Structure formats: structure tokens, C-alpha cells
Image (cartoon, rainbow, N blue to C red; front, top):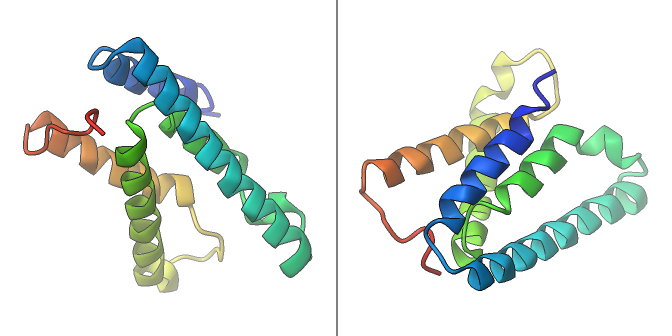
Length: 135
């Protein structure tokens, strides 16, 4: 499996963010981001258990959990929330467009979101947007 990619990307993305900000701000933002992701996970677990009557593993994969946690170390809080919500919307639209071409009913959420994040980093590296660590 490519499970080693999640910590590697998280460490490299976190290092990019840490090298562009103050350590105290970096740690505070990561803490807030992890709390946001934890609330999101709790909501998904409760929704899966009470509304869908399914185990959370049937609704949400380990790759999604690792991706969200890894992503939380890469951006300032406001940028993280904007990117996270935008990536989720991108994943939804992409899945709705491609669902007829897929044999499986599951949504490769981490895969769709990683395409969006890759696009964000391309925009950052081309210096079309330079404020990803400012907020």
C-alpha cells in the first residue's frame, strides 16, 4: 500500500507552512485544524451510526482520515477551512460528473481531494496566489 505517502506529504507540507510562519502560530493553527477535522469525524461517525445505521468504516475510509489529518498540518486555519470546503465541493461535483463511468458506487474522496490540493499547490508555486500561510 501507499500508506507511507500520507505522513510524507503531511511532513513536507507542514514543513513548507512552518518555514513560512512563526512556530507558535503554526502550532496554534494546526491545533485548530485538527479540532475542526475531529468535529467533522465525530459528525460523520454519528451520522453513519444513527441515520445510516452502518458502521463508519462502510461510509468513510482510512485513507480519507489520514488525508484529512495530513492536510491539517499544511495550511493556516482560514486557508485550511476554505481549501477543505472547496475540495469537498470539487469532489462532489467530480463524482457527480464521473459516477456513470465508475463501476463502484463508492466515492474516492481522498483521490478527488488530492487532485484539488495538487491544483492549489500548482497555483501557489506559480505565484498566482501567495497568501496561503497568512490567515
